Length: 107
Image (cartoon, rainbow, N blue to C red; front, top):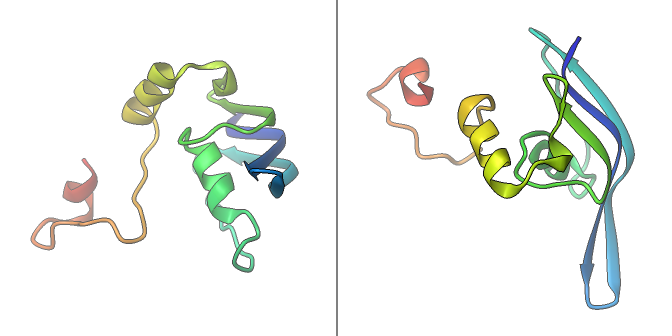
C-alpha cells in the first residue's frame, strides 16, 4: 500500500488575471521504504509537488492520500497535526545544529 499517493493533482497560482500552472494532473505513488527523486528544470513544479505531498499546500484539483487518508479534506489544524506526527521536512537551507548528529537534528 502506498504511504503517499497523489492522484490527478493540479495547482494553479493566480496573480490578478495571470495564471501560472505549476502542476497539471500529476500522479505519484510512494511505498513504504521507497526512495524518490524529483528532477527537473527550475519552474517545473518540483517544490510545489513536495509542498503538496508534505501538507504545506493543497492542490486545486485532485487528491493526496497519506497512509490511506485523503488529506486534501483536512483543515489547517489537521494538516499541522499530520505534519507534526507523521511527516518530516528538512528544508534545503535549514539551520541544523552542527554538533548534533543527523538523527539528533531531526528527532
